[in-house]
Image (cartoon, rainbow, N blue to C red; front, side, top):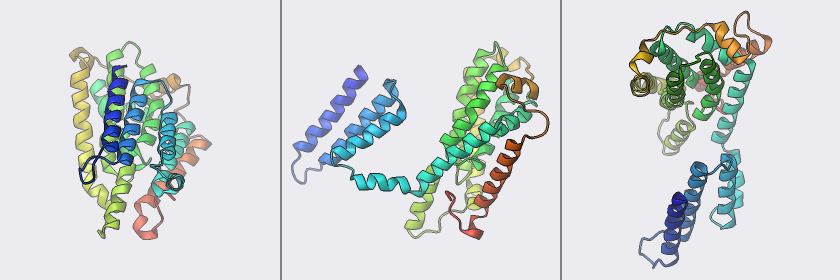
Length: 290
C-alpha cells in the first residue's frame, strides 16, 4: 500500500506539473508525464503484485496507446524490429537445447569434476559464461539455467545455504558474463546499431570478443567468490561434495550418460552451425537474428 501510494503520488505530481506548466518553464510535457506515470505503475505491478509480468507490460503498452502517447502504428512496427526477433530466437534456442537434454548433459559432465562448493560454483560460472556464445540475450540464458539449477539442487539434499547461494550465482553470472559476447545481450545489438547509425565502424563478433571476454571472465569469477564468502559459511565451503553425472540425471529424471540421443545430436548440430554463422558474420553478412 505504501509503495502504491508513493507511485500514485509521484505520477500525480508529474501529471499536475505537466498540466500546469507554462511555456518555456522546462517542466515535463504531458506525454512525458504520462509515460513516466505508466512506467512507475508498471514497475509497482511487477514488484508488488502477483499479476503476470507479460500482462502488466501489455497493459502498460495499451495505456500508452489509449492516452495517445504511443501511436498504434509504432507499437505494431516494433514487433518487426531485428532485436525483438533476436530475443524471440533466444528463447526458442534455449527451449530447444533444454528440452533436448543437451544443456543438462553438458552441465552434468562439467560439474562432475566438482569436489567442493568452491569448485562447483566456479565450474558453474564457466558453464554459464560459455552460454553467452550459444544463446543470445540474458533472458534466454536464464531460461536455459533454470532446469540445471533444479537438478543440482535436488542432488544436494541438506545443503540449503549452498543451494541458496547457487540460486544467486546463476543470474549474477548470466548478467556479468553477457559482456563477453556481442550477442550476449540485446543491448549489445542496440549499441552496435547506434554506432553504425552515427557513422562509426561498429562491432563484429570477434572484435567484441577481444574486448569483452576478459571483463566477463574476471567479473564473473570475482562475483562467484563474493557470493561464496557472503552467503555460505566456512563449514559449507570446506565440506566436500561429489556430483556424478548419473546422480544429476536421476534428479532431473533425464538420461545424461551414454550416447547422445537423436534430439541431442540435432540440437548440438544446429547450435554449432548457428555459433559458426554468428562468428563469421563479416564473411556472409547475414543478420544475427536471421
